[in-house]
Structure formats: C-alpha cells, structure tokens
Length: 100
Image (cartoon, rainbow, N blue to C red; front, side, top):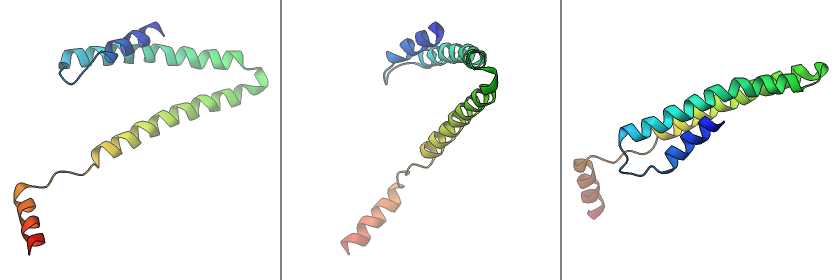
C-alpha cells in the first residue's frame, strides 16, 4: 500500500509541462504498488471469510476485477470517441453555407 501511495504522490505533482519520465515514473510506481496489493487483498478477504462464505468472498473478488476491467474499457471508449475538430476547408464551407 505504501508503494501505491508513493506513486499517487508522485503523480499528484504533475502538471501540463511534466515530462514523459515524470509521468512514467509515477505510473510504474503506482502500478507496482497496486500489483503487489491486489493479490494480498484477495488472500486476506478469502482467509477472513468463514468457510461456508468463501464462495461469496471469491465472487466479490471476481466482480471487483470485472468492474475494473469494464471501467477501463468504458473510459477508453469515451476517450477515443470524442468529437474531432473539422478540417479548415470544411469549416469555411460551413460558414459559407450559413451565410447564404
């Protein structure tokens, strides 16, 4: 958890002028922290659950992972389908059509 927190702290200080190295460093540290944390979290959930409820605990882990996957897919779809600016020629033609 400490490693993912450190990665988040590194990313908190980024701005529009940040270089690729700063961005990549923050993402790598965060990814390493989350990658180490998730299996430990899953194991803790399964061992803390009573034996007759371990199936439910496993299903919760599955649905958490499914939610993360669908969230990333939805974000990528939204980011890739944003409106694109028109070409300058098309914009001039539109203005000429509007003007009459």
